[in-house]
Length: 427
Length: 195
Image (cartoon, rainbow over all chains, first blue to last red):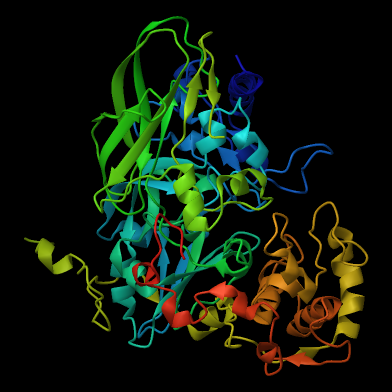
């Protein structure tokens, strides 16, 4: 049992004792009254826990500078353990977290409001319960940080290290079934004026993160989510409301959403205009690179796994694209000389992780495994050399730059050694 | 007795094309926002200065406020500390942009002075965002811009002068014109990477 589980079980047991003591004497004070106090032994099972033999978890850090230890490496978030994943859904408890150094908020949903205003005929205020009365969509979508798989910046050295796991190379992507109200519906209720061309979405976090999004996208497939994988959106994911902006860089998916301002220009908020532009070697920065390209990674076997011996293994992984639906995933077991189509597993959804697999017999020799995907726009996942060309650089640039390399969607090679160990072979 | 009626699904389905300036469809869901609510929440400031409140400040005034409210995180001379990053820089940092160790400082990299004002106003001091008065935000913005060699210590920043400040790297971003930003296909972006 991990210390954390042990703590929780101990707490629940002492809570049961507390409940006994508290009969006829209501507990006063928020800290105690807010905790569920089980009255029956079965209350311990009312919210499930995983097996004590399963310990896969996120790694990294929220990056809160107030809590950073003296020698703690810089990190910009918590990564999903893709190497242990099954299917295409990420459990909410393992969803990656990037919150720019701020702790998740503790919002009472009864007190939370969403304001829609600016260039509208009818500025409106919605409660969370209001939104649940409206027509909704329930869709599978991946969210991915633009810095996922970056070879530079915080975590870059870990990502390119030979012993990197899939979590360290690709863990800033996750996929959920999100449920919420189409933003177009809410905007129609407010009556968008002709002059509006952008929205400014704002969160309730301490930095009031704000993000400019073109109105055409806001009216297309964006929605205000209150549900994630069958339960309310988790606090680290923006409880009680977050924006879901399918296929676009994670930064657009504003958490703890409290305000949508209809405006007529991008507002050049701090993150979008100073932190997220891609500075290329010509000295110019590309800003507002919204859509994420097609990307895939073999999750099993992958870095850190160990094959006990030659013989049969089902190779499996995930593929996704901000451009649409994954149409094809090919896998190579010979360093890219030959490729074979993998099977795509249901559900194969638009702008969602898609699970793929392919049978493989390992003969015990050294080899390179890799996958490449294509989407319904016909866009094919590039090699590192091809990404470098788009950057106007050579591959060495990715190894050496100190900056976060945004939208790095290169094919990920894994090297299988004779002893069955598996290594990151990007470089 | 019927107490309800089902609405034809098509009536409520949201059109995929922008449905502008239409009448509301959902009876009694949500409520009208009051002017006071909007005023209290509407903190955003645009690059052209839209949203900037009345008030003013100079770098000299900013130095005093900085020492009291900012230096504990950002360092006495704004050189950066354990919690806050350095706020120093200059237009000379542009020369590092073509290297493998580019320096993206406020004075060298940021495109708009309004972004400095907006971020201080909404987010600073850490965990106390929104606590500074407009005069204080103008003064702190002036202090930082002066430390970055963008304005003089005696320059007065207000809603008129702040948006007029030309940041050295304003033309370092592609596309330059706002109206060219939304359509990534027209921009020739591929794989999430724009030319």
